[in-house]
Image (cartoon, rainbow, N blue to C red):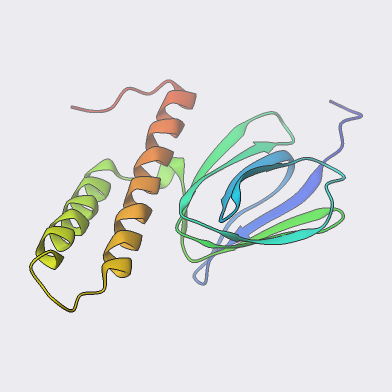
Length: 149
């Protein structure tokens, strides 16, 4: 790996810098579809949708991060993600995810009975919780961790 090209990477939310590392590649969910970025990628800016970001670090380790949306900017030698919210796989709590997903599904059911209801807000919240759940499952699989029952 001594000759392997690396990219500077940073993912930040309004509250904190979630990860700042040198990486080999990143896969991210954009509005146009999932993209993988390697060294020497052309510059771009894209909108992120809720989903799972997979980052291959320079040391070969893989980091899984759940994002709720935001932007990704690819520069010549740096990638920056500005996310609405982002959590590393190790930070995700299954109990909280299940409860939040349940509340979002209940809001969706309640919305069916109301005439003037913001369906997009309910759908967006549910999509974020499903992304967090996918990130947790992907992280557990990667780390070979079985769910606690």
